[in-house]
Length: 235
Image (tube, rainbow, N blue to C red; front, side):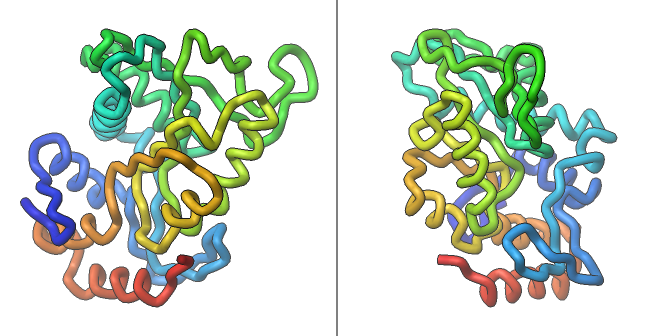
């Protein structure tokens, strides 16, 4: 199935798209909620219990993310990709990607599986790893990636990058993997802030077309989302 951006969805992508609607990872809200960006929105991108309560769906997402990391790792890169999930949803996605990489044999072209590290919402003030990340940066062993479930205006990515830098990671140079771009200018804002490499799995406008074509959402609901995106641009 082709969408306006020219992307063709089939196989794993189609299974994930169906799951996004079925389990409410992308959810239409009758009552608008305030996002971290400050905008009131009638749709929400989750990636919490909607994913972790449905492990078969979580596994598919992990496979997709592992494939993206490996496909976007240079042929001559021999270090192991280590994915750092931005809490909370990103941490679950990072673990899913690493586990799927190992179990499904998804490797870089140099033969490396993925690994992952946890990032905190509040820095630890006792014991070892008194920082935002569980583990010190080791650039000889790892090439680090950050991962989050969604980008709206890019603000939370900048905050996470500041915390990663504080913990010794080169956050602006490391690849940033975003599962869903809400198409509201967040990617451009990230680039303006200094992020050097951004990889996006899915764009929300493409998902709306797919939801409509597959009858996963009503045409009216997808049109309302498209109208909201157009009316709330940050770049």
